[in-house]
Amino acid sequence: MSDFVSMMMPIGIAVGSLVLVVSLIMGVLLMLAPGWYQAKIKDNVIKTDDFMNLRPSNWEALQFLLLNRVAIGGHKKDTSKSYELALDDSEHVKGLKLSRLSKPEDAGSDNVLSSSPSSSSSTPSPIVIGTIRMGFGHHRIAYAASSWGMEASDMEKKNRTTVFHDLLNVKSEEADLIRDMDKLYSMGSQFASEFGGVAEKLWGVLTKAMGPNGLRVPAETAEHLVPILKGIPKDSPIIATHCFVAMAAVAAGFTNVINLVIDNHAQWFVLSPNCLNLVQGPSNYHSFLNMGVPAELVALAGHWIPKDLVDNIPLDCRRRIARAVKRNPLRILAPVGGAGAQKTFFCAFIKALSPLLKNGTVQLLLNAGDHKHMFAAFEKAIKANDLDCGRVDTIDGVREFQSNLLKSSDAEPANAVTLFAFPNYFPAVATTDILSRVSDVLAAKPSELAFYPIPKINVRRVGDHEAYSAIRSSEIGDGTFECRTIEASMEYVKLMTSNGNGELLTLMNEKIIANDKIGIYDGCKNAVKIALERAKNGAKKDQ
Image (cartoon, rainbow, N blue to C red; front, side, top):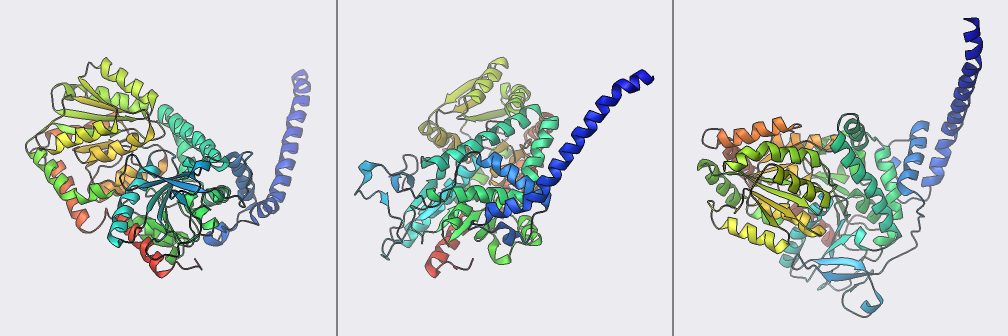
């Protein structure tokens, strides 16, 4: 025994010494972190701590420095830079302008965007819909806002342009910084979705429980992105669909900035200081007030929905009700998210639906987006279950598909499964919006689509913050609670295909019609209205 003690004693001393050294190093780092933190943020335009009325603890200061290093990497901040921008006509959306980095051949042409405020009342500065192509959600909301921006511009009759300003479309070091961060986010989403368990719980914590550093770190990142916005006239209304864009616009000196808050979970990460933050639901609104957000910087607007869907709510809901009453096949639209997660879930969903697809009870519209690995997995699952399948791979094909089904509530697709897959980004996003009008139910994770005016089966989330969006959907009556398993999802599929005379789908559509009458789906419409009113009256410079 004494020999064992003698043998273990040096190991114990070594371990104890290591623990002591690590503890001393951590103590020194914690002592120095607040000073390093203050030095890091001293020149920033965005004062997050003043906005939150909070000061970081020693541990939070150290955490900020570590997270900031992960987010920023070796990128250097240079707010003195400015990129000249040019505008092109969108090949997909008539009347919409897309921004990009100006080229030498653009010199002297009308498509170069001047950074000087417009002095002509007949040609005011553009409405700028600022976004970042990180996943599908931010882009989807940006296209929704753009649809209302173009209509408002037409009604103004002042030749005001609506510009879709995707920061990633301006080729630059700053855009590369965003891409590097997006790769990390996409990897995390896919890992959590595919492996579940501990991986999903950890990802849930990272996407939900960042606390005040959830705003401090993005604000520091946004300060790096200022050059991408400096080519825009300073009197332009900026409607941002990503907090990075809103904060970068504030840091660049814009005074009419509106941030469209994503999700339905109140957390510091989704906000932007010194601008108007619009939210989709009342629980988010009062939660932000309770967190201490100044009342003049937050307002309830409604859901972020494109104009075409809102305008056709009564017509589309009546068509769905007619189909439910006549017991037509249940047409399910199942889109994947922009991160390309949920492969395992949707492949299992295809298998579970296969008996209903074969006997004509259900039809499946499956949008694989622009993810090659998702398309390959879905194609394999469809063949493995011996399902009849058609394929659409162009945006014109999607529009033709929709047009054929709009002709009559009894019109049906040619195949039990229609697989939509594309080589590029825009059709991947737009297809879900287009097909929502001709689908009976949307089966998607509770992301931005949980707010859409279509009956929904809200399937398993990717990130704990999405759980609250499913709650919002269920409480206003247009969707289910989150269905975390295939079995739970199939219970609702069976209910929607066997519940008497279509009562559940009828109820959901009636609730959508009622919600529409009180403006629940008018969020983007209201955001554009507010932005133009502020442009007319002059945005308050003390915000």
